[in-house]
Amino acid sequence: MTIQDRYAKEWECMPSLPEPLPLLPELEKAAPYPIQALGELLGGAAQAIVEAVQVPDALAAQSILSAAAMAAQAHGNAQRAGQQIPLSLFALTVAESGDRKSAADRLAVQAHQQHQRELLAQHKAEAKEYRNKRDAFQKARSNILDKAKGDPEAVADELGNLLEPKAPPEPFILSEEPTLEGLQKSLLRGYPSQGLFSDEGGQFFGGHATKPENALKSVAGLSKLWDGAPISRTRASEGESSARYGCRLSAHLMIQPIVATEVLSNPIMQGQGFLARFLIAWPESLAGTRFYRDADPSRDARLGRYWQRMARLLAQEPGKDENGELAPPMLVLEPAALAAWITEHDAIERQLGLGGDMQEIKPTAAKGAENLLRIAGVFAVVEGKPTICIDLIERAGELVRWYLTEALRLTNPSKIDAQLLQAQKLLDWLLSNQRYSFDARTLQREGPPFVRKSAKQRDSILAVLVEYRWLNTIDGKTFNLNPVATTATFATNRATQGPEVCDTIATRCDSDTPELRLSQPVATLSRQPDPATTGLVAEVANVAAPAKFRGEL
Image: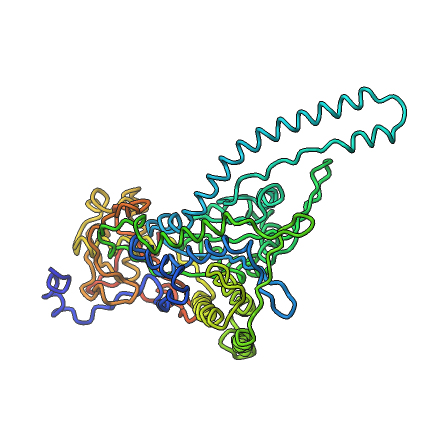
């Protein structure tokens, strides 16, 4: 029975009931991700993840593209007008809890994880051999010094003939929640090409690295790593200062919407151009549509080919200079590719001027052309091409145009009041369970967990729904859903959802209560009406609600 059926008589008798006000803003949807632009290998792998894990195209593509960049970055630099452009990519994906971020990322970096396990096993043997050689070296050195009698130069020559063993590199190529210092130390002492991957990026943004006292230094340091700048650490302790050139870092951080609103509006991250370096995607959740599928991604030929290619790139010895520093070979743009890139660059630049479409995202758009080159370079390495051809530029251009459109959509994110979120969740629960009339005590016993926490919290959420005209009450104890309210009244109100089923590769089931599908803030977001400023209060049949249900809590 629908709410209209339940209140058919009231609908006829009370045609002048006020319409409810939206709890959350109306938001525009993201454009479809051009997954085909990733190419046959990467696009096929992304599509396989979409089908097996049942995640949005953009989420799967972000995982695949950033993982491919991490494998490719040691094997090429894009060359433009004599400049060397690293192939490192930074990606940021916003997804809700239960949206299977972990499952998608786990498949994308499966070959990377396997390679790290192999490095760990190799390191055990190398570390043992190093310790033996180090002990022998120290013993031989001590013997020379003990027997030394007169001539310092003769002793120095004898010591110089000893070959000091070199410690094997630390075996880690993947990090999840490092401090800037820890990440720099790993790059200085370990492999020069690494990846920062975390499906719980909130731990990174909320951790030591981004505490107010560390945020500026962390943001500046990570930005330099994206730029491919040298790493230098100066310490007072002897032997602690060091430097290294040619290091590469790619990153993919996944965060939840509540963290995203903080991160995207953080002045330090915006002001330093840190966020401008990221390829950002905020796809709509698929929760409620992911019914069980008998899919085994380990047998998918598309993923098998992708894993094999990633494994070969990760195992391939990268080019190094005479000092042993990472020196990726140059990927030159073919003439037609350069002309196509210039066209893309100038098209973006024209939109950065006064009144241009990209003016609101100037820092991000200004890095669009460089990100385009980086993506094209990743394609070239992954697909085994010695130069960057026009096809790669065109495909990368299609992706960058999507990312810039997405950045525009996510401009000026507004913070959504936590109480409004809870009110929306309760409204969804009432509609899905057809609780068109109820009393507060029953809701306290039978309602969703977040309402049952305390009577005070229950009353505050109910007050919001009364204030926004979704609920009617006369005595503050018994409540009725406004007959005018329907699940289609506002674009932000979801359709009723049935129980969801977790598939075999999902990392966690969805929560027992319907999860609010948080949509994305957009540049064209209009300010929602505020009952407190417009004088609108809850009126039910001309009877005023008790004071505490008019927002006076």
